Length: 121
Image (cartoon, rainbow, N blue to C red; front, side, top):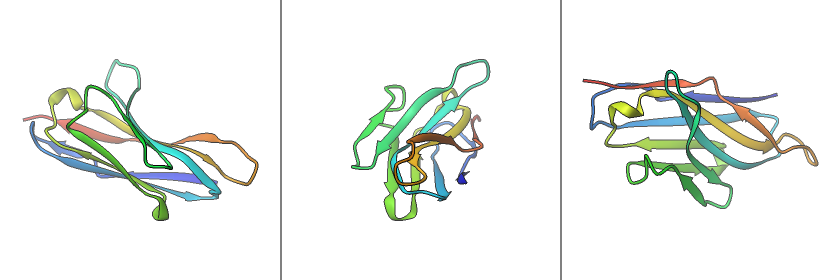
């Protein structure tokens, strides 16, 4: 059983900052990548940023220069530092991990429960 537990969402004023965290736990042999997606009301879920095990990243153009993704491999934890937040960043943010629970299995995608980020004055 694999669990992804997110934290750090909330309400912030435009221009403010938030830091999201997501810790993976349970049966984990190896993690290929971890990342963040978001879904605003009435819109499809979209990629925000991902980071692979070697440290390479892919960041959406809409947040590039404002959001930074990082990872602590020893803790199986991924972070999303969000600066200069805008109202259009308001969404539910979901953590994703692509991992192998056991040797020779997967990789499979796992999702967190989501954390609400609201940017409003």
